[in-house]
Amino acid sequence: MRSKSFILEVNDEVMSKVSYYTEEGLKKLRAELKQLKDVERLRASRAIAEARDKGDLSENAEYDAAKEAQGMLEMKIYKLEDALAGARLIDESQLDDSKVLVLSIVKIKNQTNGMEMTYTLVADGEADLASGKISVNSPIGKGLLGKSVGNVADIQVPNGIIKFDILEISR
Image 1 (cartoon, rainbow, N blue to C red):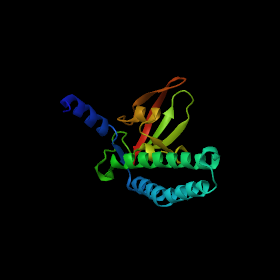
Image 2: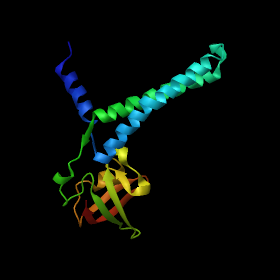
Image 3: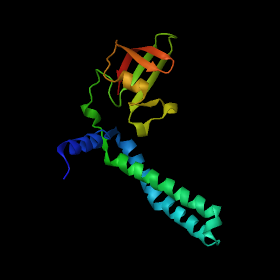
Image 4: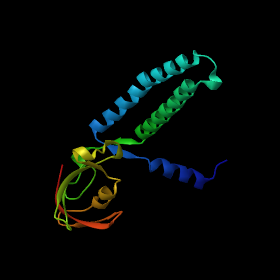
């Protein structure tokens, strides 16, 4: 029989995997999983079958590569299923605009070089730096969370600490 502390540790571990997504991000995650299961799995099975038909499996590099690709695909499917199991939809109407939270659009200014940047804080799976979306779990995202306009965020980066002024927060 398992002890209560073990159950609590497992529950804490499961609870730590909760991620918050926008409706768009959740749809994207589900679509990717569907594509992997319905299309890519079938493609991987066909590749293995074709390689198997080519003869001796002990010296068949094509077969080994197909099996390895299938294993990588299954790992990706598992990770997406795990992410979806812990996914929670964000109710944007309930978010507070006075401080930086998930889905906040934050305009910041680097105190060192005066450069201004605008980022939207999103869940890990939705992060895309090219479109200005950064993860709440990134160093900058973590440093901005909970801050208000006028606050200074001290953010630890590999080169040291960068100070950012919080200029604006919106949705």
